[in-house]
Amino acid sequence: MNLSDNQKIGLGVLGGIAVLIALTFILGWFGVGYTATVGKAQQNAETDVYYSSQAYLDGVAHDLGDLRLQYNTAKGSDEKNAIKSTVAHRYANFDKTKLRDADLQDFLVQMRQ
Image (tube, rainbow, N blue to C red):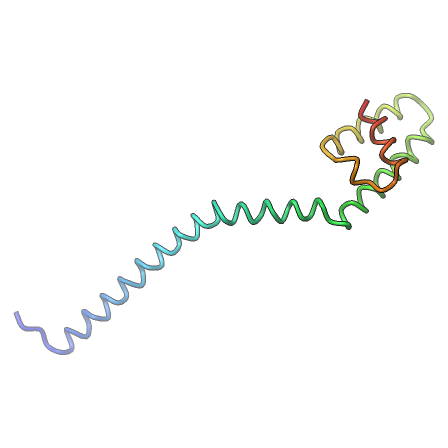
């Protein structure tokens, strides 16, 4: 069977398209694998950097300062217990040594007891 030049060109184009589709599919799966491994590690590293950032730590200090003020001005034990519970849950895994203010460190320890 002899193929004309036009038929050869047509088959070549179809073959090229099939190769491009296959490459797209294969590279897509490589992307999935990258996201599941390297991408996940990269996201974890970015999260660690965020939780160590000065902006985050300043936000925690500000929030704890507000909660300490609310606790100190609370009228009843129910209100104080609610604030204590809020602090204990919100900052259960927070490392108190990252706070520069010793009074806030003491407040955090008191709220966790």
